[in-house]
Length: 238
Image (cartoon, rainbow, N blue to C red):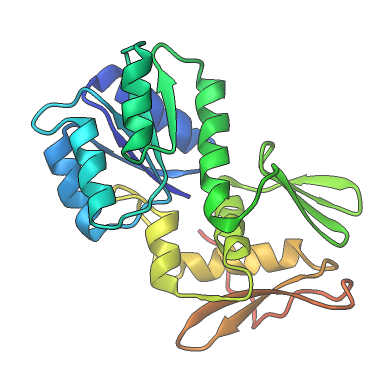
């Protein structure tokens, strides 16, 4: 999933970006509220991690602007302030969650996972589709009781497709959510990841279909046992 970190403390921002990227998210960083606001006007993110005390435009004012223009992107507020009134105020104007500094990165990760589940109506870490289980905490798939690790990009792609189950997701949308500003991706990278994911999901109810000229559609087979629908598999990444 794609996350925007808005934090003016460079050391903390660097730690946040590295931590979130290490667990598979595409992460971008802005150091002030005004610049972040400009980015949010034309880029989509699955989550915003927003510091309260920002230069040029405070986190509270940026959050208010987002909500006033109808932007419902989940927002996790970070602050060094412990006053309950500050927390209540942030939640009242549209923050989805609130985390006081200093914090444990494990708690940050858990709160991020919870917020990114909400738009899809998912309430637990594990989703089940017949003999397939998707474990969001471990970022693994379980097929017939056997756990299988997925590389970070493949797992993130699976999250995107399952989150849009039954809806065609365009390559542009996948690219925006899978890669950050600084990521380098070849023109056929998405096709390669799709091919790898299909092979790993064979024998499960989940299938990934190519919709020519439109994108990709994740759907469920009624029999639950046949392999995922696919085109000819692309060559491996070099």
